[in-house]
Length: 505
Ligand SMILES: Nc1ncnc2c1ncn2[C@@H]1O[C@H](COP(=O)(O)OP(=O)(O)OP(=O)(O)O)[C@@H](O)[C@H]1O
Ligand SMILES: [Mg+2]
Image (tube, rainbow, N blue to C red):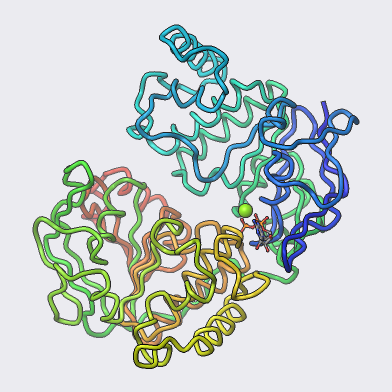
């Protein structure tokens, strides 16, 4: 079978998101779709999935034009999509989620449930997915939840499956497992579209790579004929330095001192267990670790979002252990949160409003009790320019920006202040290589201006590229401390809980 998008155009107010884009996917092949933030990848896939109507252009399956008015039309035609933000109900079982939204023609009695469980088990076996139909979804690791989404797609008998940035939330082991699944799907005759900002992944998994820039397809290459550097240049339109350029750290006085900190998660498990460390002015400390080892709760506690049960946190000698998020923020702490849509942005607000979100009570944006909107807009316009946020303007809702551009808004807002401490979780998740280069250079600049910087990332490459010192978290504790120059193998061992390496260093 062959799926074809031909001459697709999509206009939004002030933007042409897709401009005469064509793309073909055949059964049994994986096409990687790459492109900078805002290039139009998600828009194109949303058109294919019946979520958006194209301004012009057609979709064809085996040469026959098809018209989708909704996702259910697309599903009927054999198109499946796994979105980046999963659409699962956390308290439902896997089987319940798998049939959800499938417009049950019968009552949802125990018989249907039994059928759903069997279908999940069959598909799980056939594709080696290893998913228990009776498991409660929220208890499953992210990688398995993603498999539930895949099962949903397969139960609807998709011939073509679109994955929009499927790997950004996965651990390296989960990525390997995911690639195996993709290859099994491909071998089973599915056609795959794979969107990612990780160029190495595209080179590894794709049969063909299609590159978009500013709403158009600008190149199509085979993985065997390009390097990561060449891909980066094709995407961004200029050479990109994939290595962070930074001088030696000059650590000075201690800014952040964490002592014997313990924190509970939402289910009262002690997921941070007696953690102690310090960060000095002028150094970047990276926390590496497989996600789910307490990093999230540690950062929430440091930024005032989650109480601790033992221990203390001092900032510049001041006890901030029980302070509120706003009080901590006012002490010149920048925070780039892990979940941008939940805690970083107010989606129904404009770009300008989001940029002044925390500073509306500060000069020069606040003039007494009045907001100075023209100052706010000026700041927003400057930051949009500086951080290359692709948006038709600063007065559009931030929810209409592409995923990566939303992330840039947060980073810009947080870094555009005089800060003593930067806490950044997954700072470049979903961001294209060109903008990663810029954000990394800004992080190094903050360090060189004397800030203490804490980076939490599940990307070992990012941790190693930025950090002057690396702490590894495992099972709620610091399982190792390494210089920034340590090898991935050494760090990797500590990430799996081996402490011998750490003691040796
Ligand atoms: N619902 C919408 N309303 C208005 N503009 C939109 C909407 N959806 C997307 N856009 C605009 O269309 C352009 C393309 O966005 P799209 O989400 O397709 O980019 P992308 O290539 O997926 O980027 P990213 O890598 O950051 O996810 C952007 O300029 C974005 O602001
Ligand atoms: Mg996108």
